[in-house]
Amino acid sequence: MQLRRPTRQVTVGDARTGVIKIGGDAPISVQTMTAGYTHDVDKCVAEINRLAAAGADIVRVAVPEKKDTEALRHIIPQVQVPIVADVHFHFQRALEAVEAGVHKIRLNPGNIQDREQVIEVIKACKAANGGGGIPIRIGVNEGSIIERKDKQKRMKELGAVFSGSKHGHLLAIMIAKLEEYLDIFYAQDFRDIVISAKSMDAALTIDAYTEISKRFDHPLHLGVTHAGPKETGTIRSVAALGGLLINGIGDTIRFSYANDPIYEVEDGLELLYSLGKRERIGVDLIACPTCGRIQVDLFTLIQDVRKALAAKVTIPMKVAVMGCIVNGPGEAEGADVAVFAGDRRGIIYVQGEKVANVPEPEILARLLKECLDFQDKVRRGEAKLGEKKVEIIPPDPMGELGSGFAKIAGGGVEKRAIPLTVGKS
Ligand code: SF4
Image (tube, rainbow, N blue to C red):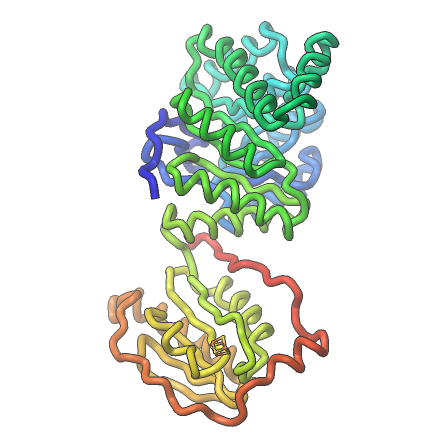
């Protein structure tokens, strides 16, 4: 893993919402965007609070109309997380959002190009927050990067993209537009900037951010735009963002799905946890993929365990749920709490000590109890996370091995697993 690329740092938020720093040595933050209408104040507040509770560090809202920026005045005092106004086409929306007390503005160089208008927004952001200023994200998007107004320029850019290397030309256009736009900001001596350069294509996203990271020292907001439904969006986002983060590139991230944005928060956090880029809040769940030796309905059990623990455990406890006792103990080594299935029963261990052997219907409740008891012990200082006291000795196999096939063939298995959700403690 490469060291994190050094960048400037920007500050988003205020004393009431909490302050999130982006770039420099700040933890990599997770962002998302509300899916509902901003002007529907109560619903928007509820959605923002739900996303913040799931772990979103920053929430962005769309402000296509004046009624949306007016709503911000009522929304911002009711939420506990910094809010970004997503501005397209109308620079006035940015001015109104700043006036309403928003914590950051996102501008798209593809649709707000007029130099004087951009300067007005920059001046407003500089003066905001009692003169302390608020940052602006310059969000270049592949989808809006080709010139729209100037016909001649548009034909030239389109011609380049559709002849020869589409990837190379798009990349060149993205960088050129970004440089052109940044010049306006530098001329105003405004450096409180975050950059994003998103594409639908994971490879282009990696190349764009890599190139930008070599040229500018502004913090980078990573994302794959319009990544699609969660099923494909996850792969695209993890491929691009994971690759960049491993190479030390990226200071804040957003997964974008055509789905409930709560998944964007959960998956963004899980990616950062998996790469060791953020300290985990809540359970680190280990589960076997199941095989012909499975001894309980593990697919159902693992989803039930995930939901139950996500709601109640707020320390980074490692919990293993294993379908049998053949390979389970070895695979679960290092888990604080583990259950191994055997003959429709669950054998539960806490830091290597066997504490229960219960029939299948009682596994969930007993496992939850052991996890909560262990959490209390850790909080009282009587136990330490990751401290395995006793080796797990695999018990003898019980009953007949294998029971998962019938379940899968019968269609009783949830087709897509949802990643672990954790709440802020
Ligand atoms: S723990 Fe048992 S059931 Fe699960 S994959 Fe390993 S061998 Fe198969």
